[in-house]
Image (tube, rainbow, N blue to C red; front, side, top):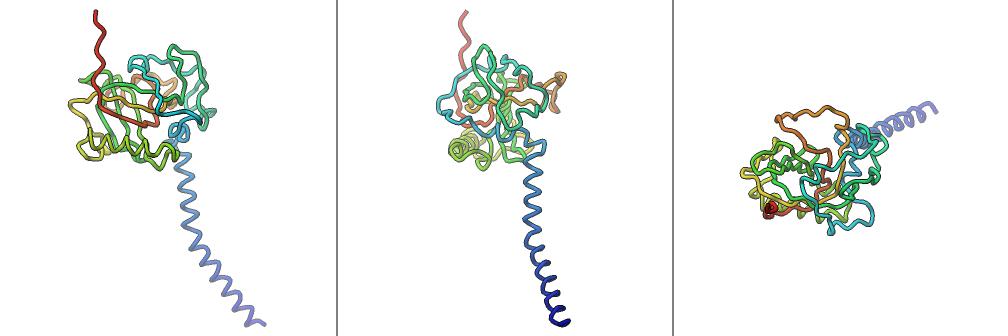
Length: 233
């Protein structure tokens, strides 16, 4: 009996060890995914990589750069507001009658494209062909990060950006500057980044200022265009 027990015990130990070896990578993978999903870079990740149900991305509202910059912050929203980490900010009265999640199209000068660590293409636009100060941001996500119905749009936008604007190259992780800056139209979901709400205005590491916390995220389309003509006086 003692010999049988000893053999069974050893087999049990070996089996447990084998299970640990198999399960350990799965545990680490699960922990890694959880950390990424809830880390600072993933703030409002589900909101900014999707559109509301029933919204047609092929019917964007065209707004000017100046009007987008003038759009006020949503009232009552606080910095990194926990109420809206997985929920869109409700509609509020504004001169454009737009709300977070609406598909919009904005024309502006594209000055810099950066390949972000999460795979997104970060695009910086301004209303000037000569300077990217007072800029707004759009991000075209990796297609794995968006719902299936948006993936063809994201893939097409990224391919157009690379083939028609970046000379067939991926953008740099340090940021690819475009000189001269092409005028483009960027289409996507209107998104409010609440990470700087209440902060005193301050330039970024390049010494440049963000004109608004409103962004176009997810970016779903981009094309070169002719700059809008200034109205005659």
